[in-house]
Image 1 (cartoon, rainbow, N blue to C red):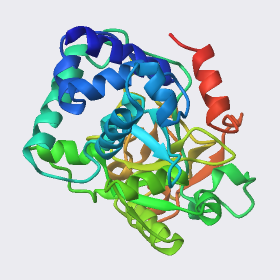
Image 2 (cartoon, one colour):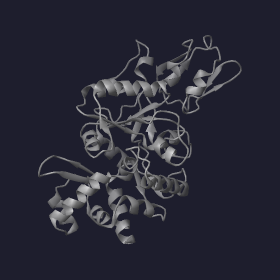
Image 3 (cartoon, rainbow, N blue to C red):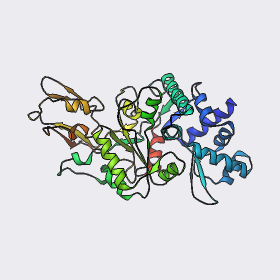
Image 4 (cartoon, helix red, strand yellow):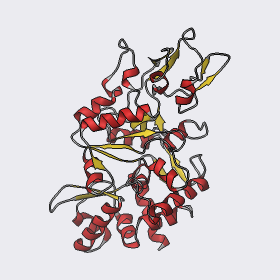
Length: 358
């Protein structure tokens, strides 16, 4: 049994371009709860890419009808992705993080399985620590990036299309919204977050998959923009996939629960999120030391000095949350000295991550 789950870890690592997990003892209880033994046997044989039932059956050396049933159960459990309707669906094994790990809690359920998974996830990360390398290794190319609040950019600021969140919302055909995995995990562990939870977005075919399998619900563009605005007002940071042509997800993140935000505050860790192309600027004469910006900053880049805000520019991620609530407009977003254009699409991102693996 252990050998099957060890082989499953190898298969999962083969499909992931972000984090690779080692075979520490803490990972096996999680996998055993996420995958039945027969599901683990199938998953352990799957190679990267989309495959028909017949192709997976050949990999696993099993009958197609048995493999079809198992793959469907795995799709229902959020451990494989399926696409295509009718008699010829395609399947691919999902990576753990980001991937099937988060999906387990995106329904927002409070059942015993969800509670147990939350504790197992917590135990794993406590065991491996915050520093990549013990229990997992990671690439130096982030899988996500911060997108600033568009309204807080000055009219004369040079803004490229990939820097505006609404550009993506306006051109996708499917949008799903789910519960934030991070904040829901906190709730299951008895450490709830006061910020709203149903604001984890996916776009395109994956959004359809999540909605069809019950891990989220489809929303139209108007509702998506409304939820995004509410997230901004609640002090959440937009973190999207680190691609420019099209983005596959947008997380609305808090620093108290979300791993991708915490990674940006830990100098010992490789940040999982790239900063935006903007950085905050302070008009010292306009600052009244009201401290609103201190409360709004999710990465503790702003502190209050001797009657004036002080900014640690090495920590600023350029999200614009502080700018949006500054009563005297003493804060503004300005362009960083060097813009970093994200990879065009997921394939280009995966290639960059593979080349920069630690």
